[in-house]
Image (cartoon, rainbow, N blue to C red; front, side, top):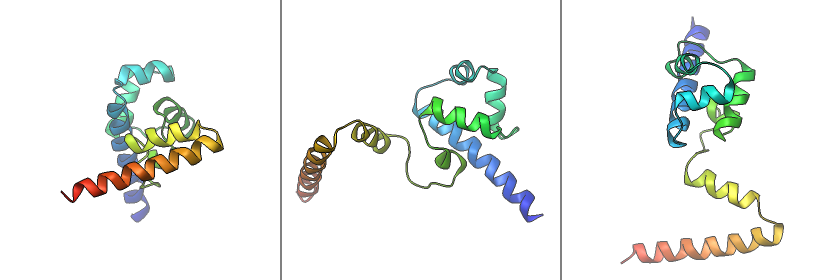
Length: 119
């Protein structure tokens, strides 16, 4: 009984995160379906939790949505979408020297924001 409940919770976690990431990216179910070469109805079933996507579909969804598999299945509680993920994406494209400069600049900006919060 416990395993069935856990499976159901996992399916709904995937459904919720899939919908959340899709909406944050400004994509429609039709956009996702086009990329996956499936129907909008199938994407709707994934998002409602009526059908659990296969591992292959999950991997393809992650590619289309630009998020990690861990995040989509609920294993990663870190925010993998939004501003944090966008910053990490920029960071990963930099050379090591540029990354060092980026960190220095980000620390300075964060210190300034923290300082200004005091006023």
